[in-house]
Amino acid sequence: MLVKLRQATRNDIDGMHRVRLAVRENVLSSPTRIAAADYQASIEVKGRGWVIDGGGEIIAFAIGHETDGNIWALFVDPAHEGCGYGRRLHDIMVDWLRGRGLEQLWLTTDPHSRAAGFYRAAGWRDAGLDANGEMRFVLGEFHAQ
Image 1 (cartoon, rainbow, N blue to C red):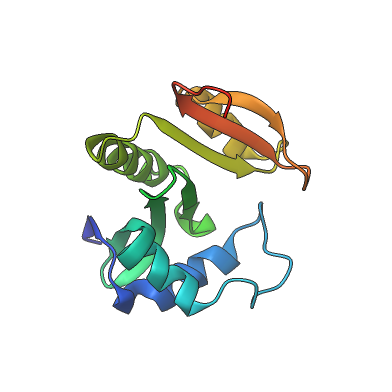
Image 2: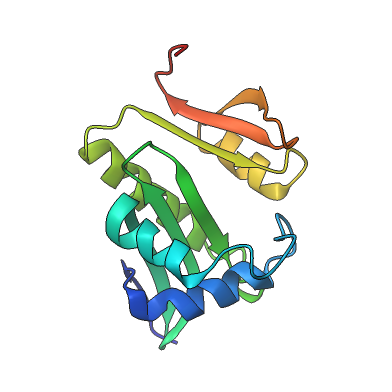
C-alpha cells in the first residue's frame, strides 16, 4: 500500500471523522459532538491539518490551530497503530506551528491514555488537569497569563 503524508483538505473530512470515531481511547461522548463544520474551520480558518493517506483511505490525521497553539486532533486508525504515523504527523504539525511563530503549544487528553505517554515521550510537559478531568500538556515556553 502506498502511504502518503499530505495536507488535509475539506474532501478528507469524512475520512478524518471515520478515524476519530474508530479510536479506542479519548472516545467522543457523542459522534455528533464534532461536525464537519468544525473540521473545516480547523483546517481552513484556525489552522491546518495533515493526513496519512493509505491508497485513498485516510488512516491517520492531525490538526493544529495557529490561532491559539492548540493541537486540536491527532488520531490514528487502530488498524494502523504502531507504524510511526502519529509521530510523523506530530512532528510536521509542531514544525508548522513553530514556523508560524508560535512558541507555546498546548493540548488536552485523557491522563491515563497511551496518548499521554506519547506526548510525554515527545517532550510535552504535564500542566495539570483541566475542569473536565483531562490532562493539559504544554510544549515550549509557557508563562502564566
